[in-house]
Length: 342
Ligand code: UD1
Image (cartoon, rainbow, N blue to C red; front, side, top):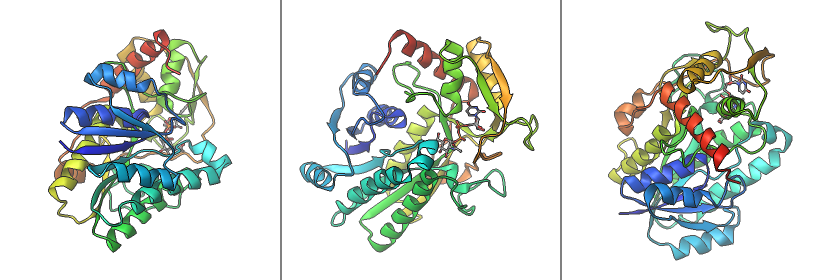
């Protein structure tokens, strides 16, 4: 079966996608510079799928290395491009790091395929919708001004891809707009490996439950939502990984919508921060220590996705619910506690 290059393949979503690609009969080839992941993830993947995936360590911002690699792998049939910097707060402190990493890597990959056709799946985010005017938000909703350099790199990358695909039919592109990826593989052998103090809700919850953090602060309890806390569309990382396989399949078949397309990847359901905390307590049997704090600057009040287009045209729908998300995140945290991965 065909070879798929997975950039950022040892990362959180990348590693789960490698597993699902293998299960679907593809041969994933991983590239990662290990700036935010561990080489040990390759062994973890091997424990799940029975083979160690082919792996190359280099920085995709290095144009020569990209060209050399692509030249040596003429049989790559598709690319799933995860490799990017993704911490919102850090991007505000150091915007150039984000513009450098997220654009040079993307442009180097695209330039390497000027002369031959390539299927390309891009890791985008519902952050492009900002605070949506209509919920659930669908793909036709306007893109709002980004509130961080990280969010801006996703918006601009979508534009780069759309314009590049329009100019050159060699590029067959799907951008997946993820809502909030959470959870871990059912084996508890791979999952999210946060760097330092987690900024995202789920790792903060699981680290509090295991005793690494004293308590969680709920950022804001006076929003215009039923319980006053902010609402998100949490999506199980394994479902999200499967959406990438579905995207590759649609590109292989030929997307009737043309050579640039966008899909929401969420469940279509919104949960508040308090509901997420209570769902975790129920799934794990752990009581969580939490308190209310001020709103976090730049936060969206409520967002959840309209997933009709993904269901109908991508042929993908989320299968796993909030219980499985919370239970698997907890199993992973307990595994990490016993088997630290640096
Ligand atoms: C954040 C990014 C988003 C990015 C996504 C990647 C911001 C503003 N947005 O989304 O651009 O694509 O991560 O995963 O950073 N919360 C708490 N206490 C905590 C942590 C979070 O109450 O300790 C709340 C947040 O206020 C939010 C919800 O939990 O309402 C989810 O937060 P988070 O996991 O950081 O995701 P987003 O902010 O939705």
